[in-house]
Image 1 (cartoon, rainbow, N blue to C red):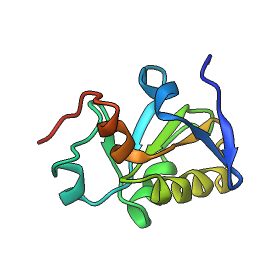
Image 2: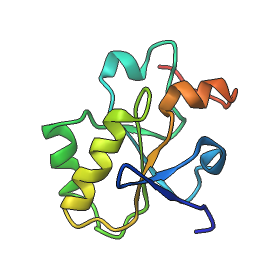
Image 3: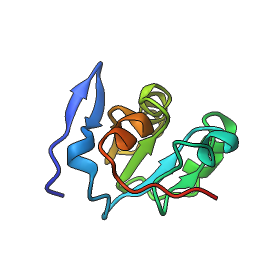
Length: 113
């Protein structure tokens, strides 16, 4: 993977510019359903796994080497999800800095259901 990550408050993070091409990542959006389909939309191909038990159960089904990019509204909940994954043995997980707010500010494509 050629994307350059950095640590932000101890969390592996990718800037919006580095994730404009999300190929190679499993995109996991940790917002609530109503947020996922609201005005900010979501990144096409993202799976919705709300932070908490929903995400915990989902992580149990994945290979610990999976490249995962966690997404939320602003980057706070996805940072928590990234740490949760690391604590569960995942090694290739990242938080998307700025979340969907930053994604939308860059004018990148979003989907809405």
